[in-house]
Image 1 (cartoon, rainbow, N blue to C red):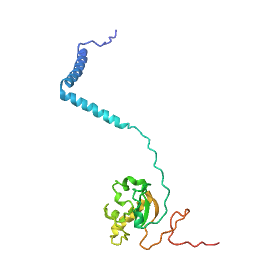
Image 2 (cartoon, rainbow, N blue to C red; image 1 turned 90 degrees about the vertical axis):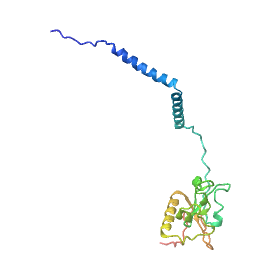
Image 3 (cartoon, helix red, strand yellow; image 1 turned 120 degrees about the vertical axis):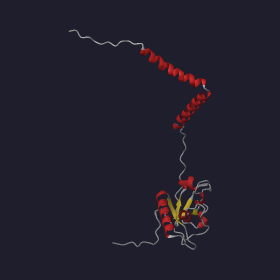
Length: 199
């Protein structure tokens, strides 16, 4: 018995499909070119794609790191603290929170001139942080005694955040309080002298 192999038979339908696909694309191109609205939309789409692709690869420019200011270890009165609001030549910014003064210079875009919290620069920010008010600042020493327990909890939370993020400089002095004498070896001030035990 002889086997028969089926061979594909050429039909006239295949060239028609290719012609209709080519005719379809040509029809779309003709429609875009002949209609001003479609042409405008295509140009707009191409422009937007260009802008998106261009913004994905921004030109990198080298900005040298800002020089580090020497560490400052000092206690401040509220009047002395006001000088450190970021407007002086070295640009140092100090903020007091709950009686502790922090160097927030590395956060100058927040606390420096023109920043959203610039009112805190060179000031005691405790009341403002407790009451969620940037404008709440006092001229003299603020003992915070009129704040509610919930507001004081908020101040302590802010103090903890500042301790994690910024360098401690010293403390905010109460009226009549004497400043602590900080030595280079001493990291944190001690409130009471420690007795040395001899063996």
